[in-house]
Amino acid sequence: MTTTARTAGSDIKDPALAPEGRRRTEWAERSMPVLRLIRERFTRDRPLAGRRLSACLHVTTETANLAVTLQAGGADVTLCASNPLSTQDDVAAHLVKDHGIKVFAIKGEDHTTYYEHIRAALAHRPDITMDDGADLVGALHMVALNRLDDLAPPVRAWVETLSGAERKALVVGVTGSTEETTTGVIRLKAMARDGVLQFPVIAVNDSDTKHLFDNRYGTGQSTLDGILRATNLLVAGSTVVVAGYGWCGRGFALRARGAGAIVVVTEIDPLKALEAQMDGYRVVPMAEAARIGDVFVTLTGNTHVIRVEHMRAMKDGAVVANSGHFNVEIDLDGLKQAAQGPTRVREFVDEWRLGGKRIFVLADGRLINLAAAEGHPASVMDMSFANQALAAEYVVQHAKELGKDVHRIPRELDAEIARLKLAGMGVTIDTLTAEQQKYLASWEMGT
Ligand SMILES: NC(=O)c1ccc[n+]([C@@H]2O[C@H](COP(=O)([O-])OP(=O)(O)OC[C@H]3O[C@@H](n4cnc5c(N)ncnc54)[C@H](O)[C@@H]3O)[C@@H](O)[C@H]2O)c1
Image (cartoon, rainbow, N blue to C red; front, side, top):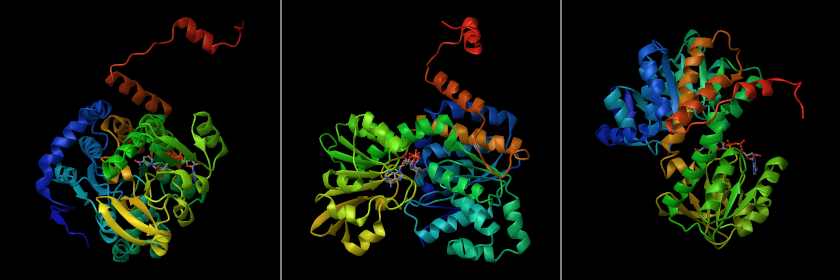
C-alpha cells in the first residue's frame, strides 16, 4: 500500500501541504469566471442540498474549484483520483483542511490504493456520481450485475461485506451520473447499448463547450507542456508522430507544429485522415511513422496503438508518450517482455533497451499532461467544469424523466456557457437584426 496520511476520514499525502494548494487553487480560480458565476448562484439557490456526491476526477486546482462549487450548491462531496499519477497532493490537502471535503488521492498511489480510494468513494453511498473515465460507474455496474470477480480486490472485499439489500441500495441510490471524457462516454454508451445501464448519465464530453475546447486546446497545450517538462527536448526541427486525429490529436498536432515540429499523423478513420492531410500534415501508417519519428504521442482512446513491432522499427533514442485516457495505448507489457529495463534516467523518463536501441517511455504510458505537467489550463477547465456543475444540477432536477441512457446537457445550457465565457473574456459579438431573423426563418426570399 502507498504511504498515507489519514485526516478526518480522508487519505492524502500530507495535510501540511494545504497552504500551497490553496494558493494554487486561488490562482486557477482567477481564470474560471463561468464557474465562479455558477458558484455564486449555487450558494444562493443550493440546488444540490442534501445530496451525496462522489467524484472520481483528476485532483487538480481546477477540480478543487469544481468541488467547492458543488459544496456551495449543498452537496456532501467525496473526491477520489481518476488516475494514480494525476493527483496534486497540495490540492488534496487544501480541500481537506480548508473545506472539509473528504479526499482519497495520493500522487503515485499503487494499484491497490487506487482501488481502495474508489471503494471509499462508493462507501460514501452517493446519490450522484461524477466520473472521468467511468471507473466509479464501472464498479457500481459490476455490483449491480453481481460480477464481483470483475471488481478490483479492495472493492470486491468491501462489497462482499454488504448484504444483498445493501448492494441493491448502493446502486438504486444513484439518481444519476456525469462523465467527463471521451473514453468514459464510449464505455457508457456501450453499457446503454447492451441494456445494462442502471441510471441516466450526462455525457459532459458531448457538450460543444467541452470537447471543442478542453480536448483540443487543453490537451493540445498541456500535452506539449508535459513532454517538455519531462524531457526538455527541443521541439523545433524534430519529427513528432501524433496517433489519432480526433479532438485531442488535432489540438496537439497544432501545438507541435506551432513549436516547429514536422508533424506526422496516423489514423484509422478515412475522414479524419483526409482532414489531417488537408490540414497539411503527412499521414502514414504507424509502421512507416515508426521509422521516421523522434517523439510519438498516442491520443486515440484505443489499445496497443504502438506495439513492440513499431518500437523495434524506431530510431535509437525515440521518445514515446501517451495522452489518451488509459495507459493501454502503448503496449508496455509487450515491451517488458521484449526489452531490457527500465532504467529511470529522469523523473518520468524510463529507458528501455530493445535490439540494441534505446526507447524512452514517458510517465509509464499514463496521461503525460497530467503526470508530468499540471493538466489543462484553468481557463479551458472553466467550461468543462461549468458543464459538470450544471450537469449535476440537471440530474437532480430531471432524473425522473431521463431514461437509463447517456444524455447531453441541453444545447441552451451549452450555448449559455459559451456566452458567459465570452463575457468573461471581454469579447462581444453581433446580434441578429430583425431583418436577419426574418430572412433566416423564411423560405420565400430568393435571389
Ligand atoms: N490527456 C487529457 O487530458 C485528455 C483530455 C480529453 C480527452 N482525453 C482522452 O484522449 C483520448 C482521445 O480523445 P478524443 O476526444 O480526441 O477522441 P476522438 O474520438 O475525438 O479521437 C480519437 C481518434 O483516434 C483515432 N484512432 C482510434 N484508433 C486508432 C489507431 N489504432 N490508430 C490511429 N488512430 C486511431 C480515431 O479514429 C479518432 O479519430 C480519449 O481516451 C480521451 O478520453 C485525454
